[in-house]
Length: 132
Length: 290
Image (tube, rainbow over all chains, first blue to last red; front, side, top):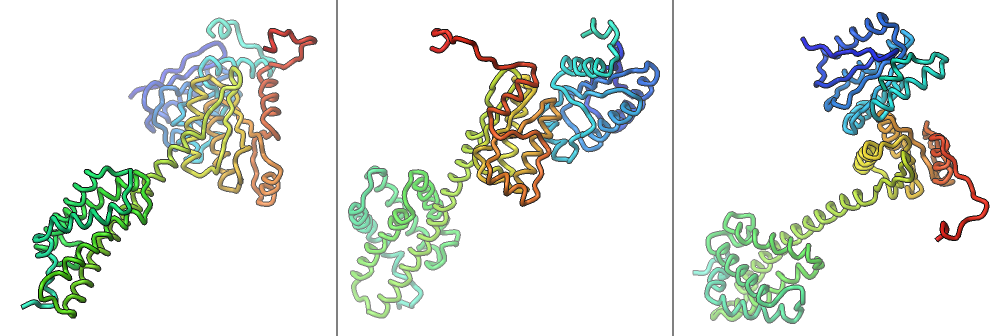
């Protein structure tokens, strides 16, 4: 089965969803990501969904779940690159993802994670600076 | 030989076709309209008479729903649709067909040996037929007008939801008119597309032009705000008029978003959030003012 790659970028994890999500893939992602956050002690998670064209209530809930799990594990989650149609669908489904931070694109999402970590008094490593 | 139901109409229509056409055109010319060229009107009338004759010949004169009347119904539907689009009034469209009555009655009266009783019943039959056709025409006319209205509504809703770029990263969405579900959809799509296109951080939704805000409109606004947030942009609502603010509070409508009294306050807040500020220069340069 396909797996969605999770990249480590300094203190943040980068997840880019490039394929159409189906339920099992979403569940696998949730599990992999949880494990990775603990393994690398990540402080931030950036999920890029700019290639995601179809979203249903399950995927929407999975995104919200991931954000909540990450929060429990002391990492901020930023969802970036949501397409207009996807945003409308999620709102119509009643899933406005209240616990999830959002940004327009990956660049801004990374900046947001960095400023959030700065605000917490934990400057991200030089690796993250260089990567962005 | 002539039973009450065997109408003389088919015979008259095929026998005196030219004469009826001339008479009809004569009546029509009295109320002629520049919107229709005479030649076109004449050919239309000719087709109608021919198809009316065809319909009467092989069908029941009193039933315009019959298959034999299908060609006639087609041309009438076509005519009334064209007239609706050309801006004819309902009365003008109906009069066009009703004016056929007079030539037909004249011909009926001129049939030799017509008795008063049969003439009366014949007149009634023809009158009912023309009335039924007239009503059919009106229905089509009405439907065509409604189509025009629906199309215009779509156009208005598309035209009246512009997204304006106020500054780098700041968009304004001045809403004008009532927000219903269909318009909200258009507004939302426009706003979200513009957020992507202009890479906006903040969108100001100005509702100065929205006449009333009830629970439904508030819900639509909140949906738009939520969708923009999912795209990573913050929304500020501005331009809530005093009466509307009162109504909203009385109705128990809550807008859990940042709201400002007017667009300029909202713009100032947006600039502040982006770390920008507006300052006055001590002496404006003449070149800058121009």
